[in-house]
Every structure is written in structure tokens, then in C-alpha cells.
Image (cartoon, rainbow over all chains, first blue to last red; front, top):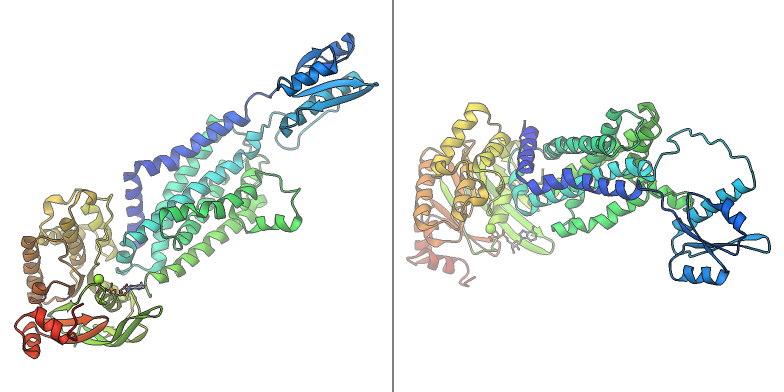
Length: 339
Length: 240
Ligand SMILES: Nc1ncnc2c1ncn2[C@@H]1O[C@H](COP(=O)(O)OP(=O)(O)O)[C@@H](O)[C@H]1O
Ligand SMILES: [Mg+2]
């Protein structure tokens, strides 16, 4: 009953606060849309200059995936490269193919190599391998690949911020002290926050998932229910962690200061970046990060279509994080009231 | 039986001793005032009585029960020194919230909200957001919240700060009426003429309770004819 009263109050406050509602519901959609356009766009065609190559050889090189320009000699081509007109210069020196890269953007360099290798392979009449995919497919864009991680991240980030600030306000405006002068239990305070915020975070997760999949067409082969479950667990973790850390902040600004310490490292370990190149002992840090489990579960569901039994470890770990943080919250409230 | 017993209570924050060996009892049905300059330890003492805070030494008992105790939080009404209200919600929503925390629901809750708001004369402003309230109105709303569950004990921390004299008078009339109906009231103040209206006063300075008596008793004990003078004489002769 007291838990419900607190949840109702939080929901009412939320509905009054249009800016926060917008932040919770519209900001993730905006960022996802931007990401969609950036990472789902047309393949970028590298500009390659070709110098000193016989006309018929040049003809056979004529490939669709690059803009080719022919130069009479290497010197002119290199000049164009320096001017920024070209991404690479391709030439054949003593029968040996050579590529001179502009080199400042590794992604462009890679695509130059890819395009030229393909072209040379075709010219050498090497049979083309038949490629088939276990998961995803040829059309899986990088947006599809890290989209599931993004969905989880937004749920986590915004709820962490909002819950932290809401609980801090409660403390700095004195209402928490007033609350603690009523017969409410410390566990009921934490429960009320979980319930009140839970309603909004479930709505938020549903909206983000629906928008990503149905509107932006993010790749999705798993169960929608599982996506929502993982998102809900992630947000509950964010909520309990946010309120817990807000006990150690004295102002809204200090909550913001937690972002580079608590949020950013999680992004690095969440699977947005490939960690295989990292020292193995450093990789293990990810085991302590809620977002790592959430991201892993989201990817498994959306890209590989895995079922509950395949991701249950992730689910239980997230649940464990939430319970641990909730208990610590109840303990931290002792600072406010002796019992 | 005493409503509140404070026995040799000491409270420290770090190295600073904020309350030193305070002992006092509050009788049933009286208005007991804690008078002292700001920073003297009034709020700290009040929080020990409510069980929000815990003493380092000594014991506090409310209605015979040793504090702090969760069940006792239902037994008193509390008004904090700063208005702890949810600004974005209406007065009604604030009242509904706190009423529910005290276990009131349905028609009983409605009834009590009306009654409490009538006492503080805010019935016409029930549906206004608290952000649109003036300082005095917020104070009165805080008082109304403390009255919601009809507690037998009211603990009010500086209840009339920022309230104009006319309203202050009407609040005092109400406190007197509550007392007549058997409610015990403990309040803090740093205003002398307000202290005059209490049945008994505890003088507090630098965390020490220097005297406890009726206003008349304090004046005659100090051989002065105003409470202000009595405070200076009994408080150790130094003006805070
Ligand atoms: N939580 C706290 N931590 C440290 N010092 C405190 C704390 N609460 C109160 N104090 C100090 O205790 C003294 C008494 O404060 P308080 O009880 O609020 O006085 P009053 O209510 O009479 O103005 C002040 O010097 C104040 O700074
Ligand atoms: Mg005070």
C-alpha cells in the first residue's frame, strides 16, 4: 500500500514533467535514427587513381565499387593524392601491383584494399567462393550488428540518469527526510521507486524496441518478449545503481560526473567494440559490467534468434545485479533514518 | 505517563558535540516549546525524539517505547523545519500521498484531507500546484499534512517561520484547540513572544538545556519580567 502510494506519486510527478518525458521517450529515438542514417547508408566508394597501366588492363579493372581515374604517370597521381582528390594510387611497378594509400582513415584504406583485391582476383580467374551465413546475412549492416547493444544502452543510460537525479532531488529538497518521518519501511521506499520507474522504463523499452525494429528495420529474428524482458532487467539495474550512487552525490552535476566513471567504461565493454585484441585479463573486467550481459543477451536474441534457455545466464546475472543494488539501497537509506 | 522522555542524551557529529547530556520530559496534553537561537540544537533534539536520528548516548522514549522504533512513526505528526513538499504536484496530491503513507484510504482519506485543510484555511487552494503556493501557504500545507492521521502527539519544527502575524495567530488558535482536545504538542521556536504561549519551555543554547519551566516560572526564577531577559540570565548571561 505504501509502496503503491509512492509509485503513484512518482508516476504523477513524471507526467507533470514534460521535458523529462521527452528525454526518456524521444531522445533515444532521435539518436537511434541518426545512428541508422550514419551506419546504414550507401557503401562509400573510394577514389582510386590508376597510373601507368596499359589501356586494356585498365578496362578490365573497371569495377563498380570504386571511382577510378586514370593518370599518365605516377607523379601526377601522387599530386592528386596529396591534394585530397584521391584515396589511393594503384600502379604496377616491374610487374608487381602497388598501392599508395592516403592512409588517414583506416576504414577507407580497408575498402580500397578490398576493392582492388576483388578486382585482381577476378582478373586472375580464381573461382569465387560461395559465401553463406550462419547468422545475419550479406545485408547485415553495422547498424544491425550493434543496434541491439544500442537499444540496451539507451534503456540503461537514461534511466540511470533520471533515477539518480530524482532520488537526489528527493534528498536535497528534504522530502526524503519527511518521507522517513512516516511509517514507511526503507524497503518500501526502494520498492516504490522500482515500481514507479518500472512502469515508465517498460514503456520506454517497448517504444525503443518497436521503433528500431518496425520503423528503422533493424535486423531481428528473436522473440520480442525476450527483448523486453532483457531491457526491463537492464533498466532495473540502471535504476537501482542510479539511486544508489545518488546517495554519494550532492548535486545534479555530481550525478553527471558519474557518467564517465560508470557509463562510458560499460559502453567499451558492452560489445560495441571488439575486445579480442585486448589483454585477456583486461577483458575480464567486462564480467563486472551489467551492460555487458544486457548487450550479449540483446545480440543473441535479435541477431541469432536465441531462446530463453540460451541467454538465461545473462538474465540471472542482471537479476542478481538488480537485487544486490536494491539491497545496498535499503542499507544506504540508513543514513537518512536510524531504523 | 510522559509522552516523551529524553534521558541524558548526547549527540555528536564528528568531533562536534551538538547536544550535551540533555534530559527532559513532556507531559500529556501540554504545549512544550524548545526555545533557542539558530544552531543551538533544537532540530537535532526533535529528530532524536522522532527516531529519525539516533543518540550517541542516553535514551529517548516516546509513549513508553524506546526510540527509534518504526511503529512509533505512526503515532506522531511531524512538520519539518524546511517545507518538504513535492512542488510539481498539487496540494491535494501531496496530501493524498502522505495520507496513504499513514494508512488512510478511500472516504476516510478524503474526509481527513478536507478537515486538515480547513484547519489551515487552504480549502480553496486544494487543486493548485504547490509551486504556485506562497511561503506561508507551504508552511500551512506542511502543518495540514502533519494533522492528517489525527496523531496524539504533534512535533513541529519552527511551525510559524515565514508566516504573517495574522495567520500566525490563527495557527496558534488552532494549536490551542488541538491541545484542548488532548493533543500533546512539541514545537521549536526562536521567537520570544511565541514561546510565551507555551505551557512549558525548554531553553537551549549550544546544545545544553539550561532551564525547563513555565514562562512565568522562568521569569521569576531569573528575577526578570521578560522571557528575553530570562533567557539571557538563565542561559549563562551571554547573548548568542
Ligand atoms: N547532520 C549533521 N552533520 C553535522 N553537523 C550537524 C548536522 N546536523 C546539525 N549539525 C550541527 O548541529 C548544530 C545544531 O543544529 P540544529 O539542531 O539544526 O540547530 P537549530 O535547529 O537549533 O537551529 C549546528 O551547529 C549544525 O551545524
Ligand atoms: Mg532548526
